[in-house]
Length: 144
Figure 1 (cartoon, rainbow, N blue to C red):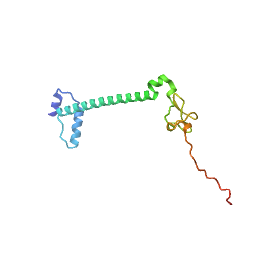
Figure 2 (cartoon, rainbow, N blue to C red):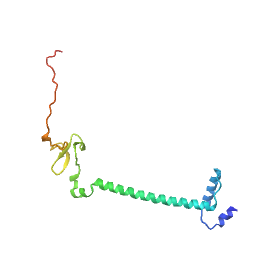
Figure 3 (tube, rainbow, N blue to C red):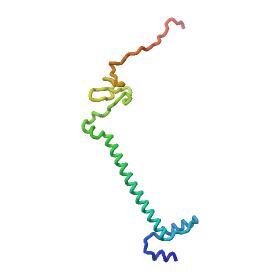
Figure 4 (tube, rainbow, N blue to C red):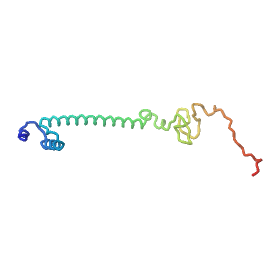
């Protein structure tokens, strides 16, 4: 009787999926679905799928935008196009440079170098105060 109802029903649905769904429900002791319930559930599933795909597309677009911004930042953007490589290898303190290089101020820019005016806490090297350091000397009066 229900099969006749299924074939004469003008609503479009996947009969195989309907049968599989009801067989699965029977396996777990749940009453079978009617055609109307099945169609309603399928519509909900399609709607959820559409929303999920829309969210995935938005996330993909955001990821591409972030990747594009990171690439532009990596390339330096506007200033690097104007100044070329002049702004690369810059530093703010000695911690930005690899040893044995230190941060040097060359007038228009601070770069990592091995000579020049050093930048240490904003105090030029010439104005350092020298401290007294005790150096122990060996005692020559000791007999071994």
